[in-house]
Structures are given as structure tokens and as C-alpha cells.
Length: 119
Image 1 (cartoon, rainbow, N blue to C red):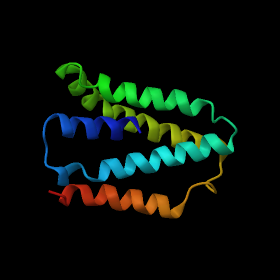
Image 2: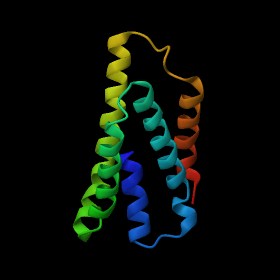
Image 3: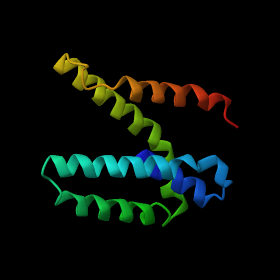
């Protein structure tokens, strides 16, 4: 969610055309809804306010200075890679890929494969 937030804010900040970042608000909305479902069904809805405040605070803090948004954009690759490693570590430890959705992995692979050809 952090990476998508940074990508969206970066694109808006530098005035990129809407077509280049239109997918990010949709992805962010999906992630927020998923996070709310997770919090709801795990009984931690009180944390939703904390996440909402962090989300909005991060949104405005990113553009306080130009170097903040640039640094955040450069760190996104590291953060994305770290999250994938954490997911793989969890799969390795549990030795159970039953919670991995074939649809989710297929959509992710399609998105990654289509990025080099998107202009």
C-alpha cells in the first residue's frame, strides 16, 4: 500500500498525465478494502483509525519537500522487494501454499509482464 501511495503521489506531484497513473487509485482502494476486511474479521477494527490517520498523514507529508517524495520513490523498490521476501519466507516456514490464490498470482504476473510494453 505504501508503494502505491508513493507512486500515485509522485505522479500527481510532477504532473504526469492521468492515463499513466489511473490504475493506482483503484489498486489503493482495493488494498484499503482488503485491509478493512482483515481488520474486521480478525477483531481489530480499532486499528482502522490508526491506519487511516497514517495513510492521510503520509499522503500530505510526502510533498512537504521535493527531496522527501524523491527519496520515497527511490525506496519503493526496496520496500516492494522486502514485502515479497517476507511473503516467500512465510510460505517457506508454513510449507503451505494453500492460501496463495492462483488468480492473484496470475493477475500479478500479468501486471508485471505488461509493464515493459505499457507506454
